[in-house]
Image (cartoon, rainbow, N blue to C red; front, side):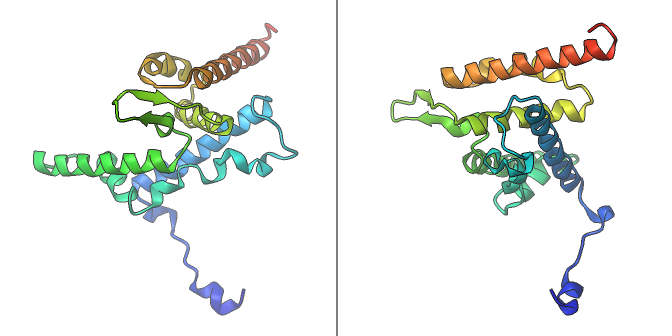
Length: 196
């Protein structure tokens, strides 16, 4: 790259990022952290190096949130509804619904991506490939990491799992992985407290 080319590259200073940009950056880092923890503890099939585990899609997790179909709608929905009148909020909410629909169809780590709605209107859960199940768990778990409470995911799952339309094998894998995470966290806590 020439010096002239380098001069044309602009780096956005941290203080010009929106609250939504800051959230996205933090979320993606937390998803990566959760996936790396699972990989380090042999819950995810191993490659020679975690950075080579491209199949997990951790390195481009939620990248569609930067797309024109999602970015503004998400930003408005989570950061710009306050003080808006009822009609404006309805427009923001409608735009978000379309952005969310785009998001789940562009990101197979969401269980909703794998729900088939047939002509008979009965939803049918398709089995999720394992790599997306791992990414889904890392996605859920990222919020617990951000709260500083890695165990929070278990309560979150208990509160939400009955609403999830999951293939039986996918649900078994999710619950087995969460049980293994819980066992490891408890063992680490015992060892840290000198009880192990």
